[in-house]
Image (cartoon, rainbow, N blue to C red; front, side, top):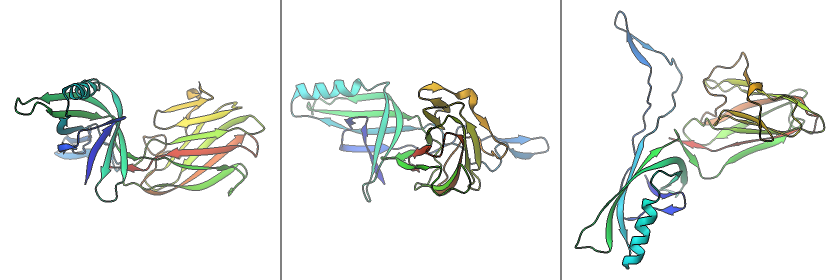
Amino acid sequence: MYWITQFGTRLLPARQESQSVGAGRINNHGILNVAGDYIYDTHGDEQLKMGSREIVVRGVLYNATSATLESDYQDLMALIGERDQLYRVWDDGGATQTIYARCTAVEVDRDIRHKQHLDLTMRFRTAEGAWCSASASTESGTFNAGTIGAGTWQGTLTNSGNAIQRDVTLDVVAGTATLNYVQLYNSTTGHVSKIQAGTAVVGTLTIDSGTLAVSADGTSLYSSFSYESEHEIDDWIRLAPGDNVVQLYRNGGGTDTSFTFTWYDAWA
């Protein structure tokens, strides 16, 4: 198993710790009882996104001097309401994973018999569905390397986790010519998506499936986004656990147009 060790830059108390790390759940299952006692699943075969859940961290805050203990207490109280990354570290192998969460409460009890101790409970509410690897994965190239046709690239993006990653960023840097648009196609069974975005880009086109944003050098191009007929999922693009076969097609931009995918391995 693992321990929650850190919130943002703040290490969490490790003395006499106990943790309720939260049960995974979905918030809207969409399963209905309809006329005739039939059961209808509005989401069909789609795997749903995990909803927000509470994570509770308990421990003892200790310091040999009252001044330092009070300073540590104030630092923890100041975290209430903040949104940052929680870190978990696995016992076997020490792998570190992160998830964005908000600190919703800090509860402190004091015992007269232990003046340098504070019994501490911290509550967090996750703001993401999956934990992510501590470091990002990238795949970069040009549209003339390993092509399957003019202006097209095909390759494999690997999500080494055990959960779907719905936050994928694609940056396409236009070459010697204006980039008219880019099409992105994931043909992985059960996760098929095909989207198009971009218009008259002379710099960098960014497609961010996590924030559902399209931009060119910081200027929104959201109106250029569209789903193609092959698109089957609710997300813009996502990576299933394992290998995902992805194609890119550029219209314009020149043969020196380059791209970079960025994503994190996702874990339940």
